Length: 181
Image (cartoon, rainbow, N blue to C red; front, side, top):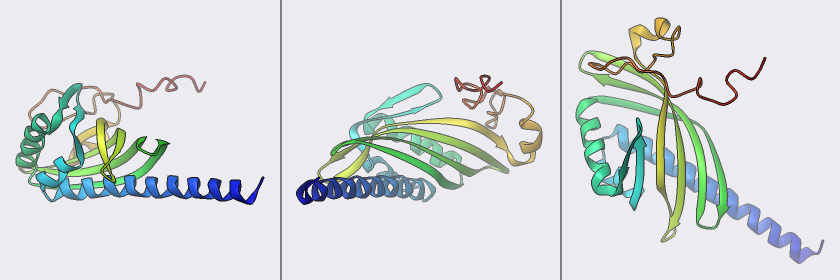
């Protein structure tokens, strides 16, 4: 391997690391903006035609995404989103994908909701900045704090206030869930 080839490899590796760091910052800024009820910042993190998917519903473009976040911000007086693991795959200079896990605490009236979630993301670089092209959220649980212990004995761990209990999105849906035996 020549010095020139090595320099090209080092430059490419550095570019991938910088891109991953910028994407992780995007996700961190998103969590802070949601918690701060900063709707304009949240929307600016999506492409104009970006997609946000929740509970099987796809919202396309900032005009469709806005009402979801406004409703969420109206409903949850206080929110605390905590990003955790964030795996990013750089596909090329302008495209990437990722999976991010996290937890959130959400205050609804007198109920403290606890959630564990995963985002599956597609990112695109536009005008020098990474943006969400697609963001899909799935929940392991969303339960009132006082129900944490009893909720884990069932798959019905989605328990938003004033809704019917529904099955969690994961981990039982994973193709490997019952294959470890």
